[in-house]
Image (cartoon, rainbow, N blue to C red; front, side, top):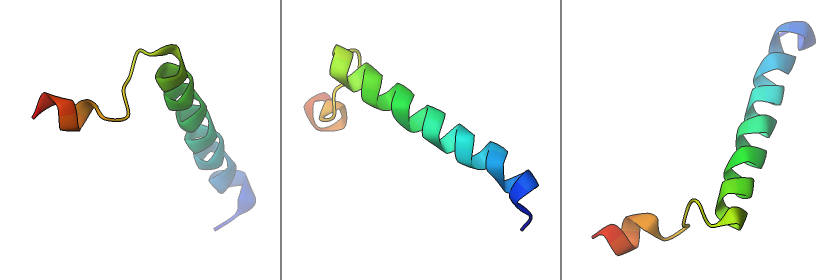
Length: 38
């Protein structure tokens, strides 16, 4: 795997992780949403 084709995936994963953490911190998403829904 060349680093040139792999970096977009790395940046995508980092951006997705930061977005999820931000939503959880803002209270938009709950880490226990699946448990409370059941």
